[in-house]
Length: 494
Image (cartoon, rainbow, N blue to C red; front, side, top):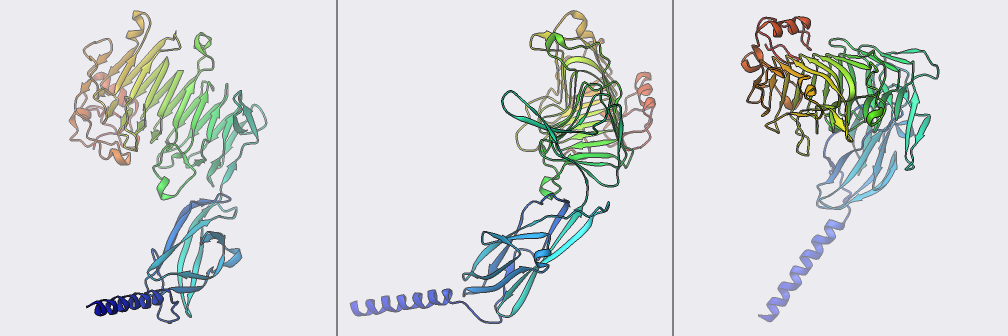
């Protein structure tokens, strides 16, 4: 028995030794092939001079013996706009790479697009070629390249803590109106500043892409006019166009109207995926804020969505808004601090944030004080609007301090509210409706239109509702409004 057991152990050892040697032996068979996790790699639009994100493919050896890949190279060689990383090394060509039996390796891929001076996108193509035992296999590479106008900082503000805010001016001259061409996208690094007495005019169908922490800063007495059109909206979003970033908030900073002028206007814009969509404020702190200055933003037919903090933030400022949709923000969709003058008509404020951290702030916040300073909420009107959200039972916070008069200066009329506030006061509420969440068509994809079956929203009647609807005869999508049975919000129900 002992001898038989020893023979069994010897045979077992020999078996595993032979199998192990076979696995470590490099096959030279012409039938050996590699397999790939994908046979092509596509990069979405990449701007010239800006590197892409990194993608990868997995190269598998499904053979029972090791393989030696004699060559891996980019077909276009050193002229290729793609860069590959194989076994920790970047380059365009690699030789004699082994993969053990039933093992794999990763190849990482990036692309840089050379300037073309073309307004339309160009297609960049190449192939990764693999040569193994006399056989050739390939993986296709493709990228869409886009030239652009680049706005890079050439100055910086140094703060007391040693940090810097890099910026550039739209022009070095004063008293100028700069009209941006719209034949190519605009890519902004740092802050682009509209200085005192300057005006930035942005035409329909202009695409603006912001790098990380970038923004547009409209300084005191400066003016911005974003003049989009139906189906030719001005789009402002992050500069990363990869699929993974299509709905990633917090990619850029904000449009900051830092006092600005009386005539700031934004019409038919789509502002998304930033930190704060629009910030409007008067310069000063505490009692030093000069609220007598008539600074105003007129915001119409605009969507602000998917912000990692606030959608529209107003600090002691004057805002007129109509036919807007402000939605899906980490905190407030509308944050009014230190009062001001506010008029919102046929607007939808809807917070269905579902991007990571749970939301704890209401959709709309109205406040008239900070740092022990009260400023007047001159008026704050919501006419034919929707204020809704999916996280809280009360999506409207009204936080006011001061004399009795301040509490009469806000007013909701013919509006649907998701709130637990007492809406019985005729001074502050007229023909408002509260209750269940609005049956929007698709909040997760930012579609806040409503069907006719949503009767809580779609059938406000009366002179006041009709008058406001008639002032905005077309909804944000260009569809005619019913001025008899009025739909609250930015969309006409249909």
